[in-house]
Amino acid sequence: MAYNEQMADRIREALMDLPVVEEKKMFQGVCFMVDDKLCVCVRDNSILCRIGEQQAAIELEKGNCNQMLSGERVMKGYVYVEDFNLQTTNQLNYWINLCLAFNPLAEASKKKKSKK
Image (cartoon, rainbow, N blue to C red; front, side):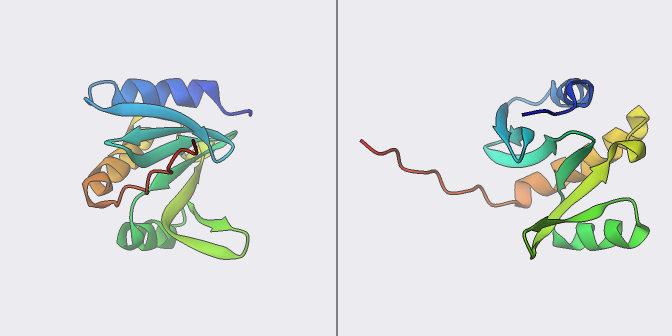
């Protein structure tokens, strides 16, 4: 599973002061979970941001990101941001802050029951 290690390190650094951050391999990359909720993921040349439907609509209109699709299905509230829009610390922090602002409002995914 290839993902941009440098981008992952930049996100780790941005999130290091938060009390509860967990990394999980998913979505063909590594995802950072904040308070057991998906916050931001790193892929090969983009990050996946969970920013909520309203903010996603605003950002999509600006043209700085792309809607996440699962097959033909639109994944509302999730956007991809290409690495050329994340070159500076300020650019990256802008997206991370959007993710963190939405995180308290996001629903945690249901835990899968382990088979015994």
